[in-house]
Length: 433
Image 1 (tube, one colour):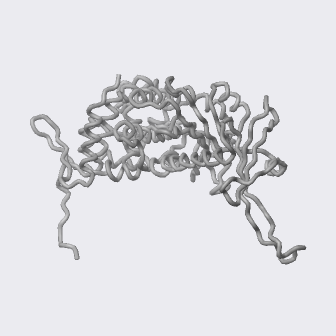
Image 2 (image 1 turned 180 degrees about the horizontal axis):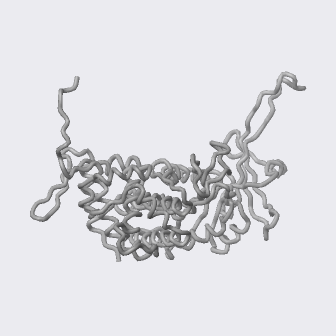
């Protein structure tokens, strides 16, 4: 049985999201606020109370705290402790957030992307990778209203539902989202994949010496392979081809060594419109299916196969290529993290470019978390956002003022005290040029 107790709403300057101060310090170190002020060309009236830069950052921090809707930003609006720390003297309401984001055009969304790219270069100046892997994917985000650009298209979970169809690129070594395109739901998966890839390569720091691309079947495109090869890079992409099974059945198959039930094949093939033939590797899994009772030989099982086929210029055996491509599945987890845990695509207005800017801001929040953990933890970003949120963001704190100094008091028995101190010291020691 619980003890009897009384509830009083009398304390001031309390917060349940004290861990956002880490992100705030990290943002200050990166100079992100000023970069947004300088990089976004949206003009506001002389009497405007809220800057576009602050609006983007409040949303990014809000989704890090768990907001899934513009109305959920009220958790920050009524957090007097955080408002004092972040100097949020004025705080937009839900309708004002929507009105400010509706000022975004396609040009402004590109500017927001450019700011993020400049910040990424600062992060990579501290910790960089000579060789990286780009995991490409497309995803579907269903909607329940009549938002601009939401159309019926490819939607395997809810056929006929209106949706958006973003393209995303993640860096496997860091788990950050390198590039994202917010697209209409009617967009075909492969639409714009070459231009999207060109943007991805352009966003990377110049000291990256080798790039490998792993893509789902939406990126099975001869022009895309031409571009990657011209960059002296490597790729492995799942094949999407009419008559693929018939093509595979004509190949010579060999049993995979020490892999019972699996066979492999490799061959060259030139698709319609391609400039040259390319290497295909394939794996098939033997599936035994019992024959029907009325078949000619009822005691003899039929043999069927599950096929896996990839186009690649990597020097790997078919089985090695199959296992290597399988690592790309991790990027599908990161997409789900962005969608379900960082509200990417679920915070919507009626305007397409506003929704694109909000989508980008949510991804920016995700990347800020990834970058902060990358630069402060030996193993980088190894936990999903909800875990980081539970351990280091949803922390109770009490803001006190003494001798014109602010003190944030936390629980003496805080479970992750050592990790908090380590994170705080690492950020305070950072310096970016």
